Amino acid sequence: MEKVELLIIGAGVVGLAIAAELSKQFEDRSLILLERHSKFGQETSSRNSEVIHAGIYYPTGSLKAKLCVEGNRRLYQFCQEWKIPHERIGKLIIARNESEIPVLESILVQGRSNGVTDLEMLDQDQLTKLEPNIRAVAAVNSPSTGIIDSHQLMLRLEWLALEQGAVIAYRHEVVGVDFKGSGYEVTYRNPAGQLESIHCRWLINCAGLNSDQIVSFLGINLDDIGYRIYPCKGEYFSVSNSKSALVSRLIYPPPLKELKGLGIHATKSLDGRLRFGPNAIYSETLDYDVNEDHAQEFYNAVNTYMPFLKSTDFLPDMAGIRPKIQAPGDPFRDFIVCHETERGFEGLINLIGIESPGLTSSLSLAEMVKDLIS
Image (cartoon, rainbow, N blue to C red; front, side, top):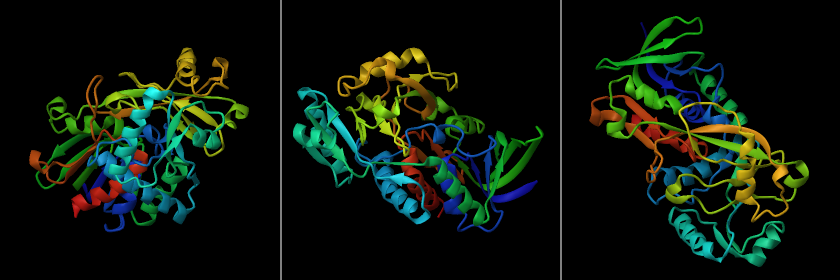
């Protein structure tokens, strides 16, 4: 049986970032990344808003807060170094009426507590000067929020990992994991459909929507430790180019309670398109269809602060599925990044529930995994 030092499961943006970071310190071909799809980023990493978040909303001291704030800085530096298309476009979190102003004030306090230093409160006049077509009474301005070409980011991370000697095996689906005391025997189905196994000393679980399944292969009860994934679908609708030109920044309403989501918000793509989403639909069925009937729901969510839009403007765009560990009705859940020594699994590092702000946090998550191994 082939033996390697470190094996990563999942070639989303986080798995690629970890491969790019750790391949600096491992010998050639001693780090392998297995991915069941034919290329990288085919699930959550390529089906999202492509926003570089600032780290405003999350509880102070949480991994989501710390890794997002640090990841924001790292990601902009990385984009500049490697010429990844991005834009520091800025975001406005708006109060649609006077009753929402206290919510904005608490968001401002929370963001500053997390280390986001460039936030400012805008009154109606200041807001109107920035975004004359937005109807709101106040806003929190986040200049360090941006957008990125996530495909080009992942392409560069893949290149770095390969250049530094990592092996990336696409169309290799992990179907079993056994702990052998000195490491892990990972069984996978190769592109020909045959079962093969490989032994690794370190196993990094970045399998996203299937990360809980990897844990269950080891006989761990997911519900006992809170590792079960609850897939949450989010749909997006877009509008015409002429309407897209009426907004220049990301526009967010106040977030949903318990941070179940950030609400249906307006994002801009690097080519200038205006897109709305995501909604939040818990579902066991992993499909990426956008229900055209939900256009009215999206219109109702945004027409109070974007009065230039009509319900007929909303066109189905795309859908993504978030790997939530926050079940419907549950309170806030943080990222899980855990070296499972206390459960007797030396060398196993689980990354579970890496949803938003996972893209922004990808480089800082890679650094955290490196520190755990060190």
